[in-house]
Length: 405
Image (cartoon, rainbow, N blue to C red):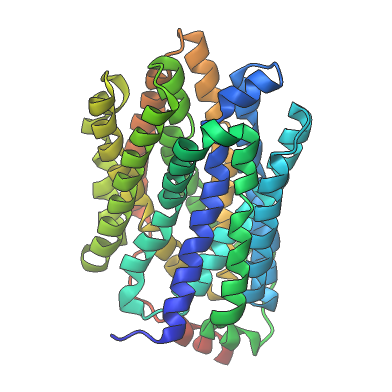
């Protein structure tokens, strides 16, 4: 099925929106040690900023999701991107840890809205048979952002320091101009706009079982991703004592694996179904654990990181399309993002928990990461078997049918 020019622009904008969102987020994980030194505190105290960012994301998903369901995906996405870019830059001006924590909390609100709004806009606009591969592409935006942060850290950190890293984070604001010029509104939202819609609470009440299931599933998914990513640069710097260049190279390799995994399993889900693709990719993590967490030397660690992120982001690559397909039509900009970010809230303890565990076990970050990754990989593989399979539903037609009721 051929794509229109507008469909291509929507996909590019949503991919870049999530890429640059993740870029701003991951700048922090590379400089935890430096911020701790600057403010004369310990690393777990700075890692609390990651916890706060993740914990505040559900509020952003709720606020911006509701705005997108009421006023449209396109204008809400523009506001979202502008806000997280400015807040990311302001983090570099923090005079103390308290200010830094407040700014990262506000950044979490802005970051929390982008994923749900961008994925809804895309999934409602593109051809149904393209959703699997585009889902993988959208979720690949997250490791793409990590990859971009890795490159920036390796190239610019020694010249600009940790504050300069955050100043670079204002660049995503330029994406707003691209969206304003090239991205149309979702056709499914235009159909839904024509009729009165029930409140969010009413919709969630009618889909109570689905909502609880999705929140628990996304909690596990967020432990899977953040449990294998957020403390990884610190693991390389503190436990293995690698220099910034080596850390940068390994994380680049890691994120190439993540991008490959997301694209491959997202595309595969179009053939074998969303549930099977997630089941297979999650279980790949188990045999990879020893190489990923307990090997030594940059080459073996890079190989382990590459394979682990094929598993993690392979499973995640199916999530944008799966959550949008099982979502109630009336709240598609709110539901996927809200359950995703509520999962983030419950998993937001991860960085602080892993850092504290590692410090209490002679800085063994590898053990802390392995316990989390192995546990949630099994839970995800079991839980996904109980999900709905709605591969390929026509969202615009579904919205019309709801409007006719």
